[in-house]
Every structure is written in structure tokens, then in C-alpha cells.
Length: 180
Image 1 (cartoon, helix red, strand yellow):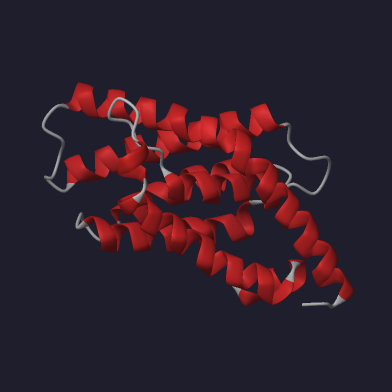
Image 2 (cartoon, rainbow, N blue to C red):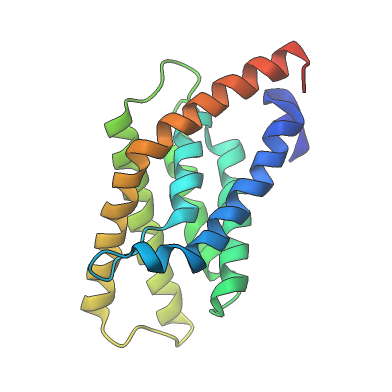
């Protein structure tokens, strides 16, 4: 794990890889309910991990998704590992592309990828809940809320993805110079 960060930005990227996903998980339980629109809450862990996946690639973003997923699991009271398991495949999938090494992904395309990751993660989470016997009382309502949450998350990615891309560039430059 540290070899990835030491190669591509050093201790700052490692610290970001811990702090940002943990903060997103904490905010998911505290702030997200307050900014819900028609019952839909943004998936803040997917927002940050997905934006990082598009900006920097899957190698670091899957760690962000795992850390955010475990923290979200611990804070949610649901089955341990369910969020982590639901977050990993979509984040890995959107981060596999070119890893942000060439020209940056256009903002709207990145937002669409993050929304798709949020939708996939939300549906996977519902499937995990159903498989563990903790399914939602109304599947159509849960799926509708998941779709709305994915759209909300994608909309927020329009603002968050450019920040992730900037942080990736700055930390790569600083890491290459040996500053960190």
C-alpha cells in the first residue's frame, strides 16, 4: 500500500488516503442527512473515492473506498463489510481507465462516472442487505432512492472532481521533487 503512495506523491497522498475517506464516512452520517433532497442523500464516500479514482486511478482509490466503506459500516450499524464490499467494484472499475495520467477526464464525464459508481454501489449494497436478510421494506422505493442518491452524488462530483484532479497534480509534482 505505501509503495503506491511513495511512488506517486509520498506521505501527503498517504495522509490524504486516510483522512479524506474517514472524513467522508463521518460526514455521511452527520451532514448528508441534513442536505437530503426528497429523501435522497449524496454518497459522500463514493463521491470522494470516485473523484479520486477518475483523477488518480484505481490503485489508490480502492484504498479510499475500502477505508471509507469500513468506516461507514462501523458508523451505520449495518452488516460489517457491506459498504466496503459495495464500494470496491465500482470504484475500481471507474479508476481502471488511464488513471488520470494523460489529459484529465472532462468534468461532466467524470461526474457521470462518479454517478454510475454511486448507482452501482447503492444497488450492490441493497443486494448485500437482501442476501443477509436485512432487506429494505420497499424494494422499488429503495431503488428509487438509490437512483436519486446517485444523481445527487454525480452532481456534487462536478465540484469535487476538479479539486481531486488538482490535488493529484500538486502531490505528484511535490512527490517528484522530493518535497514531501
